[in-house]
Image 1 (tube, rainbow, N blue to C red):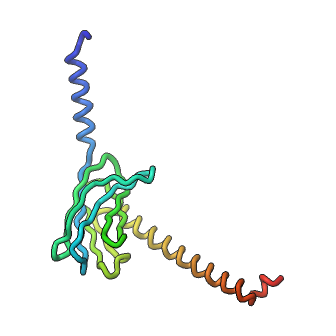
Image 2 (image 1 turned 90 degrees about the horizontal axis):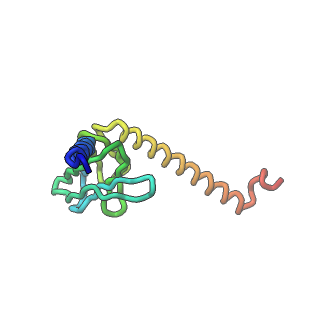
Length: 153
């Protein structure tokens, strides 16, 4: 090879560019009335894989901080004991999450507008699913009792 140093220099520049493309984020969480436990931050991928990012233990005040890096915005999950979790959309910067362990679905976030939008979407979808389940129960009870005049026709 005529120019081996040129190849090394190009490889070094490419490596430096990929490292600089990584964005850093911090997730600060305060959970009211939580027992001492470990919490995981996981990245969710389009192939249904989870990638471990960081973990922490709550202190006596229910506070902990998690750190990560990413090349592009992504979907993440804060995973707590008893299969409780919070979805986050993270890119860079600091995101703050406040939640009451006894009313876990009503959490607040700041520092990430996409996370707030994701929370609204999940709450709306959960409401629609609850309504669909209720209508299905009513329909099944009417079908079983035979009291629906439209079904009798």
